[in-house]
Image 1 (cartoon, rainbow, N blue to C red):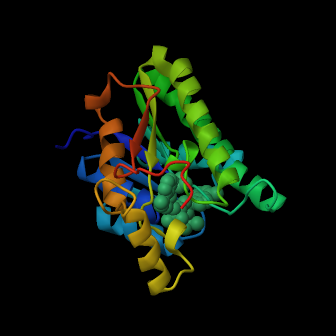
Image 2 (cartoon, protein in one colour):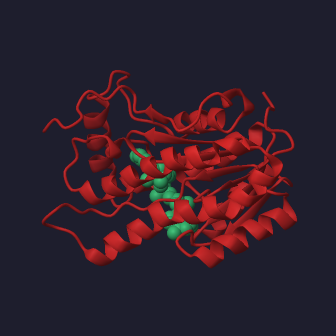
Length: 256
Ligand SMILES: NC(=O)c1ccc[n+]([C@@H]2O[C@H](COP(=O)([O-])OP(=O)(O)OC[C@H]3O[C@@H](n4cnc5c(N)ncnc54)[C@H](OP(=O)(O)O)[C@@H]3O)[C@@H](O)[C@H]2O)c1
């Protein structure tokens, strides 16, 4: 269904993984898409080439407030005022109570939390003026519990994304803007598989698959279709919600 015809979307971290799948999903629904990336220029360019003329690759570090403002201004000039924002860019560094690197935690916080705030801040005035907007924030099932040790601080950033989602939904609802969060479970991307051998990756995927009702891990497209719905007019009656897509995981806060 081409239900995003005429809309302009910004997808942060759109160069690979879930963000890439979201860019393709929104474009397939008819949206013009700004594909944001931090360092993966070629990967982002590949996504825009796949989409065609209605796409633009834009470099910006979402943790840099001025760079985010410039990204939104360029999107506005070249594709139109953003109607849709998908805050997908994210980092995962290991970190638990007695074992973390403060610099890594700060980088994760700046990207995963402040990045969401800065992007919402930059697109909100245009959405308010037009009386319509869709904001979708990528949180994580880690925000509500996990069986994976060493992800406490990452989970805290994703919990903050849930809080921002609720509060921004409250702030922006009078202007026709909905704000929802999507919480993916384990999804096959670099974030969870980079640096692993094929054997290690296969073992991890099998272990996680065995803990879900559907018996598999997520593909980026599983998450992108949910994001696509939350960006559409069809979701107008839903705001401030946490949409969990984890294959029916059965092991939250269970030691394995
Ligand atoms: N994969 C999972 O299992 C999973 C589960 C739950 C939640 N999530 C969440 O889903 C989102 C996407 O995850 P993913 O697995 O697709 O990650 P990924 O494969 O590691 O891709 C991350 C993307 O974010 C971009 N990025 C990172 N830091 C950035 C910054 N400061 N500014 C702009 N872009 C930045 C990267 O761009 P460059 O390549 O240019 O650096 C890349 O496009 C994240 O928010 C993640 O926390 C993922």
